[in-house]
Image 1: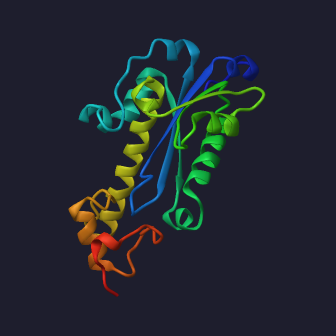
Image 2 (image 1 turned 90 degrees about the vertical axis):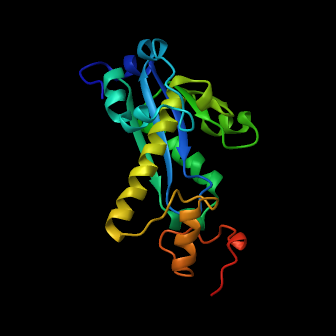
Length: 207
């Protein structure tokens, strides 16, 4: 990223947007993504939507699109096993902090997963890092929207990879998905990649 220039100068102009995917699902890892760009690139960005309402072509070609836009990206993947052992809000805060540090952004725009955006701002903000947190930030800001699309794309790629390896049909990982329900019932109680602390009572499973 951005080589052959003074890093302190670059630091003044880099803005990053963060969002996550697969937070509430019962199967699979948690994906936290950041999209970041120089200030002048950010100011000229159009809004391409978010993971819930972007065009299908945008989702399918997001990596190429970001290259065209001169927007960089990075994703942290947290396994279902770790999600089972830790508080998911703490995991998200840690991943967000790490992404902000690793990308040397000077302004971080974060989709807020906590009840109070100010609380998350206080956790993430540093002396040389300004952080703005908002609920549904992916619907308001082009970089956060792109980050939500990247995170969803990484989730889709992960599920597709596991399905290719195992031949199983896992669905989206959401308990409201018929394919996910069937997958869990078929393999219960030893369901691969299942978040075991999730409430599965609605599936009426038996040992």
